[in-house]
Length: 285
Image (tube, rainbow, N blue to C red):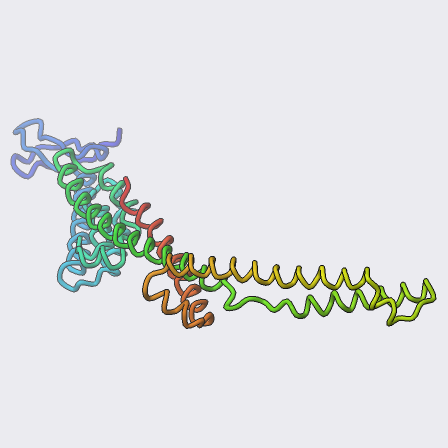
């Protein structure tokens, strides 16, 4: 082991100093001395204390939370066993444990540094840290409940808006279909008359074709009537399920406005879901 020669400042005797130890004692008068290694360690501790103090000034006096967070994070790299640096990051992330800041913007990376602080904090400090973090967790739970309530309201509203957007304003006309069927029958009649070498008009006025015309006439009439009944029934069901505000929108038949509101709500719903996922990850230890 490397010993370095030294003189006792009290009795003048020679000292044997082990640079691998923090202290030495004079063998003659018993005076204790701090070695260079211990002095170096003390200097490191002094430096950390200064850096903690500087970070604290940015946090509490300048209210520069971004700078304070950066300084505290740097200390956690150089002194990972000092819980004050880890907890300093938590305080910086939350605006010095500000309820307003937490409710407005959440906690950022705080959860990670809470865990770091609890891992290295003395036993007598852990209860205090837990209590402070529990207070933040309560605030986040309140924010989560508020966001969830907004999400539920928007989801319910969009169910109504979806009904409005997807329900046709009016029944589609059956005239194009009727014209299409008549055209097909005329083509068939021409082909049939040529095949039987009969006059086209005689074919059209023949009893079988008259029966076919009557059949499809009743199909169109009763089909349209049935669809109208079903449409009116569905319309009434939708109106009864809507709030007063959405019922007015439904009656106005302003589909474009309803669709715009639906898309706007969908964007907000996606953002709320993202914020809720972040909160769930921020405070659950």
